[in-house]
Image (tube, rainbow, N blue to C red):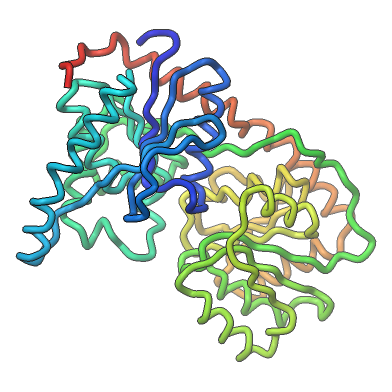
Length: 383
């Protein structure tokens, strides 16, 4: 492949929605653009009619991506919608003429990228962000279209990547992937991270989608076991918000817990810098981007030992690994960091060292090596 490949980053979701894949795609696009690549983000139009926009210098196309529905009426509606959708995808292709179609998190975007790859003979890369592993709604179990589409896309891809070893294993075991390369998530570095522990430590923070797999209910159950002065802030939104509010009331700790809703990446980072401990209490977690954010903020982290963070956190060097299903164990880990200056410093300094390996520059370096390893671009058909 040419030295400066033109790239379409085809994301399952993007701005104005906030989350890990959105942030990953945006940062990769920015880094590719800074290196002189032509790059666009193509994402799923969720009916918001956003069309074509330029965000931070990157062109973003919101493309219709309807899938067939099970009811007769739904299937007929899809039959009407799909010619329009395919025309929009082909128009995007003709405008950019990408050398590689890079799917970020497989969903309807991946189905259409695979169709376009076959039509134009453009190499495709599929990057999984754990959508098959840490999905509360089991969409790949419920949807034959998505499950079959993912298997076919993995077979048809030049390269498959996963954000963590557990995700790679799931792609191999359940979706018939043959070779999967681990490319971890990244985080923006460069903010000041060296600071001493505060004399009085009482601020605990967690962040993520308010869904069952994230384990925020487990964290709330640990709050009554924490020092009485401790205050917990949870950043994020989701379907479990009201259930978490009710649980806090039942445990009589509602006055110590603040659910502040979704925040942008900069606000999340500022909140972590202001906190004393960051907690990742997930039941299931493909990777654990929050760990990287905590490290970049210079704040020690207590992370789940039963999910993704256990693949890259070294216990008692750059984080504490605990089983969040045991509220006593979870509370004990948090309390250690609130009370122990030496441990706080050790984990904060360890995280600052480790996070240097997770820059966006390093992520894009890995992607570019994979692009160039594809070899000569297959001739385009002129679609």
